[in-house]
Image (cartoon, rainbow, N blue to C red; front, side, top):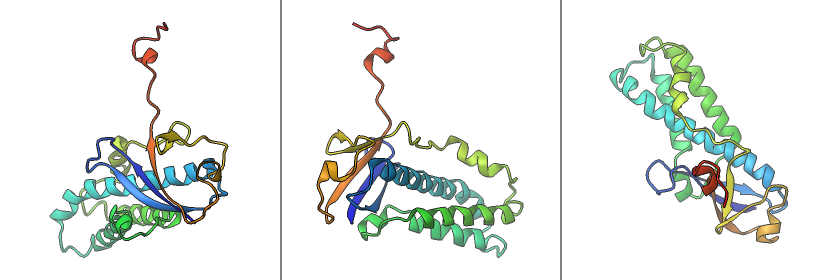
Amino acid sequence: MVRIHVKHGGGSGGDGDGEFLYDSETSSTIDEIAKDIIEIANLQSKIQCFAVEFESHLSKLQGDPKVMSLVRALSEATSYASKDQVIHSKPLSLYVLRNHTRNIEKEYSVTHSVMGLSSSDLQQFLSDLQILEENTVQLLWAGRELTRGKKLCDFIGRNEKTKIVIRLQSPIPSPASLTGGEKC
């Protein structure tokens, strides 16, 4: 298995950045890898958004047994989706992240009235979240874009014990589009 260290988020390297490990085979296509890691990055961001949004509401209700299931679900999800998993060399699973977000949403639907929120507030919390779009995000490795339609082995060879770092980046607009579309 190739160990892929994925970095996404703000380009300045601040706390807003997300990162995680993902395992893949060299025979996997870039399209398959992109689909999985973009969804993992979006789920990781979603869990972090839930943690930030719920923190103030849950701190007021600290110790209330009615919200403990939501606190527990949120705690498990944030620890699993944490950047600390990279330090411990633990790759994230798409299926586990999906399960964690479903658990948070389920517990929220049960406890939202105790927190003084409505059921529609959950989607409102996520409205400011920047979701990565699969068809617009570029996968960069060693300063080069991993071209869709090719296999990972076309870029890194067939060694299954390789470790690489990939950065997810939205495409940079061309200078012509920034100046109003005039071409030289």
